[in-house]
Figure 1 (cartoon, rainbow, N blue to C red):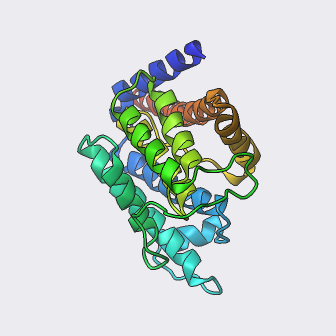
Figure 2 (figure 1 turned 135 degrees about the horizontal axis):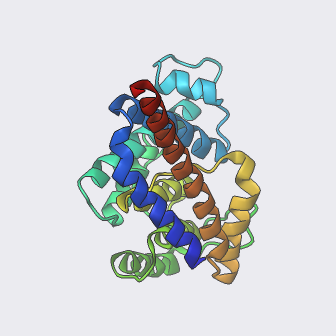
Length: 254
């Protein structure tokens, strides 16, 4: 595990050093493409039926999608807003805290339900092997969660994994916990100069199994492995693009 983390850090630092070899236009294109895929994947994970193409039409081309429930449209639009809000705070170097998470949830729930407030009722996670704590215990565990975010000895990838897994285990909102958890997972990654990742529905079984392993056995390793795999894929994509650009520039200069 330590060797994998070291490899990811080396690739992250190599990307930081050579990122300017990719044009601003290319980087913006990669960022936009990720944002659309992230919004689609995260909302689809919760049952939203908009296709990737429909999500692109709605977010990038600003074309309305017919025959879809209004709630599904808002889920997609709100996810984009919430992720943009998170990115704006990351640029300012703000550490993740309770107020930021509540605001992310409030944005996600706009025109759907009242957001930004922790639950005062019991909830269940459909298909999960563990049950979220009752509201009283959840409040205590949330206090510990936010203390841990401020003071811990996690490496960057493990911190991102813990942020997602522990938050979704506590399940502090009545709805939208998964979407919030995936945004704050990426918040921690990007704040530490890693690339954001998107978990596709094809990886749903692996994803939920890893979360169950943490929820039931307090074992974070499977989830760390999943995030590490997806992070490495993102880093390799960007590093390969840099190498291709270098080769192209060398050939043009001959």
